Image (cartoon, rainbow, N blue to C red):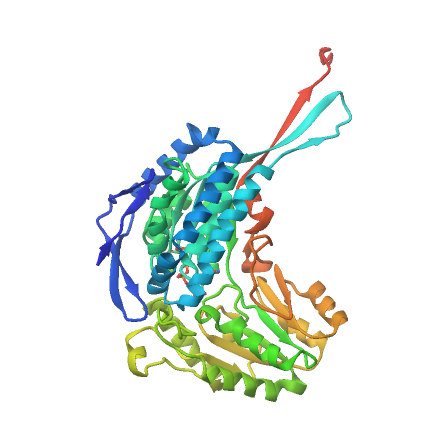
Length: 487
Ligand code: NAP
Ligand code: MG
């Protein structure tokens, strides 16, 4: 069993806290590592390192071009180490190896994109009516506290670290308690890529023990968080004490809407892909599947047939299409929703833990489809974060859009139709930060990611992602040498 430690000032250091957390392989329940459950003192040490690097340098003096080069180096290193990191990601998070490999390719692309963007951050000159020059400068915000979930462990770390480094910030990052291994495995490569000590610091531990002190610390200028709405609200409240900037990505209950004129085969595929990819542990999961009544029965039947053939297994086996859930806690949560669904709607397939043969050793649940689900049901309103789909019929476009928007969330939505008028009306009327037409889930580092309504605040990725790590400084330069002449 491996013992991991904190990463501060480009070195692995023992924690002040003597509490440790077990890291588990969710496919087998084997304990594969132990990690520190860091405390406020550990966080203070990491913040001090990040502050030093930001306030005193050399990071402060590192040119944008050099920051860009460092990010390109990181992208190259990730590509070189992709196989090893993907395997570790699968062992720690449960996801199928093919998906982990896709994540690693996205991690490299993320570092690369922000490497290119580093030299494109610039201010503006504003036309003002007096004899003066008015400038708006863009400056890094300072020390960023970054708190991430377990569903895409290394990719979520990259989404946070890359734009922060690009902007010239320094960071203290807390991975999820369940999945600290890949970002710590990458950490030794930070110095190799050229990052000075203190730019990226990693503190492991529970949200209450290691996360809350990051949010409370006066030396942290900004919090970037991805996770649940409940914790997002707590973070927003706690950040108020020091008026930290916050960006939040809080998941959703995304509608995936199917009109009768959509290509049938592509649509059924898209419905399953939208909700079952990554075991359904996806913030943008298309967990509400809205189907036009004229194809409803046939569509449901086709979905069920395909869902029954999804190959569950340890993610490390290349033939596996769906791995275990990440933890006992998440398994219990999803099992509760499966039981709740049986009371709230009709079960079409699944609805239980998957226990045949070796699956009994891990946190496996059957891909589950409920149908005739009232949109007001809890399984249609609450984020389940597992392979559980709610299929809901609708009669016309108006009703489809009304149901789609009838949620407190607004992260993503998808619409499937060959009618361009209808597709564009849906694009215009869906209250979501991301809308896909005739697809669901493609995610590109070039394009903004984030939610309307309670799905969050701010945007990640693209040039929007770096804005979250920048302050604007207004500068007035007087060009008139005469005294003001007022008093
Ligand atoms: P969570 O509790 O929101 O965890 C997200 C991150 O926040 C973790 O690193 C967590 O630490 C940390 N955290 C928890 N309490 C905190 C606090 N008081 N202050 C600072 N940081 C804190 O999510 P979860 O418990 O892992 O999963 C529960 C549900 O959240 C899921 O079923 C799903 O519905 C939702 N979720 C959404 C996303 C998304 O992408 N939007 C991702 C994951 C989960 P720990 O290590 O202690 O958890
Ligand atoms: Mg948690």
